[in-house]
Length: 360
Ligand SMILES: C[S@@+](CC[C@H](N)C(=O)[O-])C[C@H]1O[C@@H](n2cnc3c(N)ncnc32)[C@H](O)[C@@H]1O
Image 1 (tube, rainbow, N blue to C red):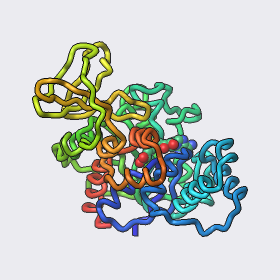
Image 2: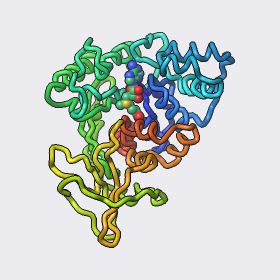
Image 3: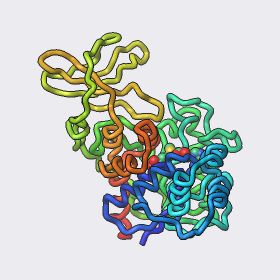
């Protein structure tokens, strides 16, 4: 049984991939500080399991706040029902909370450590503040992973982040990190994966680094790129209404044939025009400009992507979306979670290869 510590866990795309591949695994710990991500993880992975701890409300609040999860003043005012759900989410998924406060004694033994650390300071559309050690940027949380790797020496490590990590001013930190892992005894393999080549019509180039403790004689990242398997018609929620007449803000790049649908990115980036394509632009937390467009009898109509469609574009199962909704997450929260996450099909491809090569 593969024991997994899913750090910067979000909704847990890594474990969704293992689940979809029907692998035997056990999540021994997660860590995230965001309340909605904590709830999303619980509702998609924990099947409503309840904590065994018999705590009163004050003790529950203390437990969550001490781990640095959520907003303290919000938690202090929480009603018992909401608090109970958040407490179950933190305890059942063993969300260890803020990685900067994490103590080595609290980290369980595990075989796979996944660390898709925040990208805001690295991404081409982010702050560009970088990830220098000690800089205090969110992306520099990468270096907090050292205490886990040095003390627990998990057999496998899986890093995911934006492609920009490997280029420009971030390249030095990326290379330093790989060298650090080598010194710790790991063999590294890395590659840029774009979701559009792995069965999902979304452009989402991301770097993945797989590291194995000890020497390794097989390539743990294969170049077996698949062509898009799901197309736009597999993503669309045909029950969604709210289409309105499309009035282009500027020149249109691309087209949509009569009776067909396409993705629309109407931001007119760099005055290049609005984009119509069969492949969606990258979903990001906070981006709302991604839309669908259809041609009905020669007339163009547009509408925003809904949260179910955003989940499908991340390779989540529809049941993951419905479980988050049952857990009372709003569509806005779900879309933010999607924007921060990893396309599950890419991870399935990566894990499948590791399983084949390593006979785990
Ligand atoms: C890029 S997202 C990871 C998404 C995730 N892999 C998934 O499958 O959805 C980074 C996550 O790191 C979390 N995070 C930010 N600061 C953190 C901290 N100090 N400790 C732990 N998690 C943190 C964010 O809340 C966010 O969910």
